[in-house]
Amino acid sequence: MDRSSRQPDDAFAGEARGELSPRAARALWWGSAGLVLAVLGTSVLVAGADHTRRLPLALALVLAQLCALRWQARAPVAVLAANTVTGVAVWALLPAVTLTGALLAAQVTLCVLSATRPRRVSVRALAAMCLAAPPAFAAGGPTGLTVYLLTVVLAWTAGQWRRAQQARTRAEMRRAVVEERARIAREVHDVVAHTLSVMVIQAGAADDVFTERPEQARQALRAIETGARSALGELRLLLRAFRPGEGEDGAGEQREPGPSLARLDELTDAVRATGMTVHVHREGAVDALPAAVDLAAYRIVQEALTNTLRHAAGADEVSVRVTAAKERVKITVVDNGRTRSGGSDAAGTGRGLVGMKERARLVGGSMRAGPLPGGGFEVAAQLPVEGAS
Image 1 (cartoon, rainbow, N blue to C red):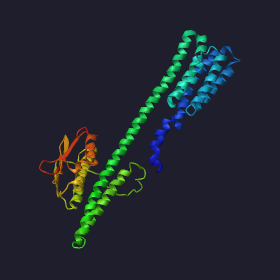
Image 2 (tube, helix red, strand yellow; image 1 turned 135 degrees about the horizontal axis):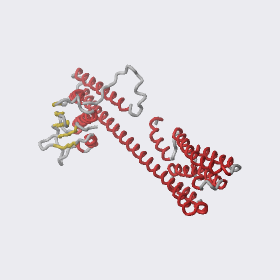
Image 3 (cartoon, helix red, strand yellow; image 1 turned 90 degrees about the vertical axis):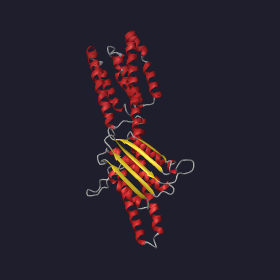
Image 4 (cartoon, one colour; image 1 turned 90 degrees about the horizontal axis):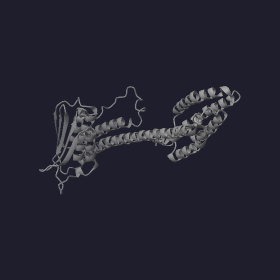
């Protein structure tokens, strides 16, 4: 597995461990240091005006807190302990600075710890901070105690809110990655299943007539080559989703057009090359459809034709009808294969129909499929045009 394929999972793992990027850690440091310097630094200068001998030491302790905040994202437990000790020391030197104000840096670190570390760790840190409640009560009475406990609990709660927000973001990112991988898997399945089915049938036909009708065998082989080249082009487009930077290595590279109803003739020609009779009926303009609807319609037709080739017993004829209107595009694919006993056809038992229904659902449409009373199998889909994304 290459490095690029591991990057999303590594990012999720780093977030789960509470790791911040260097840029985010620097921004956190500057913000918290600015807050502590503006509030606590100012309080120390005001309170130390009457204690000129204690003021330098108190300012040094404030500076030590600012420096310790540099590592709060990496080691919040150690920084919390250091800021608590230095904060209590500032309060002991300058009692005019309330204990709540002296422990401001510790409260900021508690918030970071609550947001980045497991809850059991942050709860212990919260309990340790609450041990300073008796001195707060002794110094400020009930009001001082209430203010101190309120600020400590609010700091811890803010960290928990941030942690929950990050968890939701990670869950959304994981869901987006899973959905994208599922979409690419469906695309690869459609390309490979259809192309290989056609190639197998053409290869068998070429082997049957190789000696008696060599020109017909050559036509089948050329059809195999054409189908393989088309499938390779589509797979290259899909794989660029995993390695987006590596598909732009040739400025003059000719890119294959993407799957679209505009390429319906290419799709049906490949099926005709197997000996199947294909009737195509178009109504309306299909070149102005939204990209998502156009791709879904093409893949539904492709999968329906693949199911006919692989599963429709005795089928030698299939009809494809595409009707594009302003509100929706209708797709109908009907073959003349025999219906299996029990009233169900083999085409309905695999993952192909599930994939087609999912494609229709993703663009807000619907699809039904099943055997017809008089024989044969029908796939019918309706995809909305307006409001599709």
